[in-house]
Amino acid sequence: MKGEKFLSFPVLGVLSLMLFVYYTTIFIFLDEWLGLRTSPGTLNFFFFTLLASLSLFSFFLSVLTDPGHVPSSFYPDVESSTDAKDNAERKKCDKCFGYKPPRTHHCRVCRRCVLKMDHHCLWINNCVGYWNYKAFFDFILYATISSIYSTVLFISCVLQKEWGHTIESSLKLFYVLYGTVVVGLTITLLSLTGWHVYLILHNMTTIEYYEGNRAKWLAAKTGQNYRHPYNIGAYKNITLILGPTMLKWLCPTAVSHLKEGVNFPTLRDNS
Image (cartoon, rainbow, N blue to C red):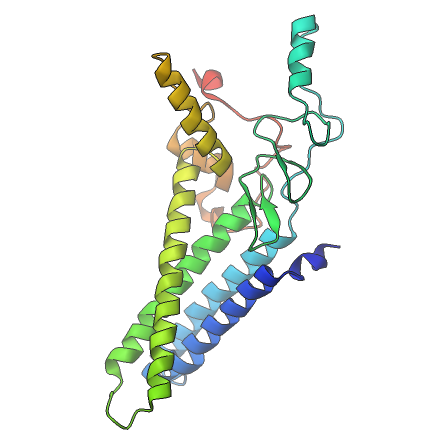
C-alpha cells in the first residue's frame, strides 16, 4: 500500500523537521518579534503557512506518486533486420529482463526499472522519476523558500531581543542550536535546488549527468565533441519538464503535459 511509504525513519524525520521548523518559526520567533495578533504578524503567519502547506503537499505527492513503470507492451522501435533485433536485445534490462525505453534505469532499491530515473531518494522513500520529478522539484523549491523565510524571521527576532544577563543559558543555547539547524538546512536546500535547476535547464537527470561526463571524456580521447542528446534549448527543456504554461510551473499536480515517458525529443529531431 502507498501509505506504507511513510513508515520510514527518513520520511518521518523529514515530516518531524518540517513540523519543528513551522512551530518554532510561527509560535516562538514570529510571535516574539511581531506578535501573531498584529497586522504584520498575521500577514507573515499567512504567507509562511502557505509556503509550509505547499511544501508539505508537494512532499506527499513525491512520496505517493509512482515515478513511472515501463508499460508491459513496450518494445523498442527497430527495423526488421538481424542487427536491429540484436540491438533491441541489448536494450533489455539484465535485472528484470524487460525492454528499457530511453532514459530508463533499473533501481536496485525498488527492484524495477523506472522511467527517466533521476535517483532513488531516501528522504521520500521513493525513486524520483518521470511522473514525480515535478512534485519533487516543487517540494525542494518550496522548502528552500520556507527555510530562507524562517531564517529571516529568526534573525529578525534575535536582533530585536534584549540579551541581558537575566536570559537563561538554556534559552541562549536553544537559539544557537536552532540558528545552526536552520542555516545549515537553508544552505543544503539552496544547493539541492540549484543543482536541479541546472539539470532542468539542460534537460538532464542526475544519472545522465554522470554518464555524460564519462561520454565527454571518451569523446575527448578520440578528438570528438559530446552533447547531451536531450538538451534542446533551455526554455523548451523547462516546458518539457514543468509544463508549457508558466503559471502552472509551481503546481505539482499540473502534469497533463506528460505523456507515456518512453519517447523524448532529441537534438536530431530539432535539427
